[in-house]
Length: 243
Image (cartoon, rainbow, N blue to C red; front, side):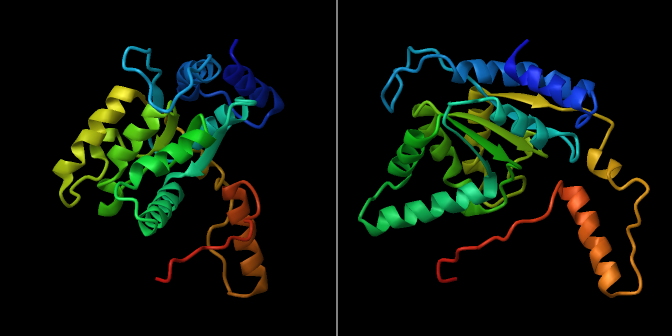
C-alpha cells in the first residue's frame, strides 16, 4: 500500500473521512505522482528530450467531491520533497508581480527567469481551483507551464472544469488552445465522479437563515462559516501594486 492510500485509510479509520469509491479512484494517480517525485532526478534546469517524462495530474469534477482534500492528503505525504500547495489564482498573481520586477530590471523575456526561480525552489506545485478567466493569465500560462515542466516540476491541480472548458469563450481563445493540448500531454486528466457533495452534507440539519440581525445571528453565521471552511479564518494581508 502506497503512502497516499495509507494516509487515506488512516483518515477513514480515525473517522475524519468517509470511504468514497470516487475518491479511491484517484489514489492510484496520486501514488504514481508520489513515486515519481521520490525517484532520482537528473540535475539541470532543462531536461534532455530523450529522458523519460513523468506526468502530473489534472483532477477535475463538481464542487464538494473532495478534490482539494485529496490534494492536501497527497502533499502531506511528500516528506522532504520540496513542494508548495497554493491557490492557482494567488500563484498567478505572484508570477505577474515577479515578471513585472524582472522587466523593471531590463529583462525582455520575463517568463523564463521567473519559471526557473520557481523550479529551483520546488519539485512539485499543487494548485487548487485552476480557473482561467483573465486574458493576462491566458496569454502567459502556456509558456509558464512549458518552462516549469522543462525545469522538472511536477504539477498537480484541481479544477471544477474539464480542460477543454478552460477559458471558454475568452478573448483570443485560439491562442490559448495549445495550453489545453499541453495539459493533456503532460498531465493525466482524471474526473472524480461522485453523487455526494460533502459541502452540502455539512449543512444538513443546520439553519441557513438567521433573523433578526444582531450579535446572535452574527455568531451563528460565523459558526456556520467555520463548519464549512473547516476552521476559523486567519488574518490576511492583500498586497497591492498601486492599483
